[in-house]
Image (cartoon, rainbow, N blue to C red; front, side, top):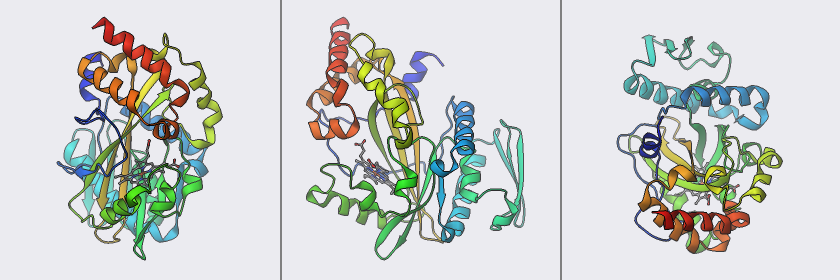
Length: 316
Ligand code: HEM
């Protein structure tokens, strides 16, 4: 893909404001598609499958009571794939006997919908291997949401193994300032009111020194050190803007919530080719409070990135 196409496809995460703060920035999702396929489809699902094989305990978790909800996820995603990408995915249904075909990987999978013994792996694990998104399942009970299942290969510095079974507020407790003005509670209440057929989405952003999608907490030693190598000279190539497109779907039967995360990365040297983005991002990064920069892991090299952006602004 050429540079302009990269830029056009990139989900620019900042709205009109010159400052960034934590907020409930979710908006209605229209059209209501859980899945997007990009040019990296094949590479990313290959990487996902490799990680799932080598590190199942890190990349997959499920509690037994989530199986019905997992089937709802399979239904939702397959329906989306065959509707929006009919030349890449096919489905033949005879009552509950389904044959799902992934044209690109040349796979035909036959199963009985709703019968987990008809698949070699759990339904959520199965369908997650055909999409670039990470898939997390939050189950609702006792006025709360719990992370009861998930397939997670591309986490931005967190651990599914550690967070498994946690409530929404427990999961978000490491984020400084997230409880201020009861933001965590307001977001939880919002999530519990999400209705089937009316999904929502938001974007989250961060910087990464390097271009790894698998930045799990467990492998921090392999990728965290690159932060120390960032200089004004190498920032354009080394540092990437990492954006997560996150979507939220109510599952009508189980009342669970499917949370999909599609992680996109763009090296700063490409990002700065669009001058309005460059200037806006400079202001945001310059103004970003220390507690947010610290949490996002940017503090060690924020100065170097700002110097790089300044120089790029001078050139234009
Ligand atoms: C319901 C499904 C959700 C799950 C499973 C989830 C999970 C997570 C996790 C695991 C983290 C990293 C925490 C850590 O450092 O250990 C995180 C960060 C965060 N989450 Fe969520 N989240 C969800 C929904 C939301 C929603 C709806 C919002 C806001 C409207 C939100 C806002 C945030 C923010 C602001 C951060 C900090 C990100 C950063 O600064 O880079 N989350 N979330």
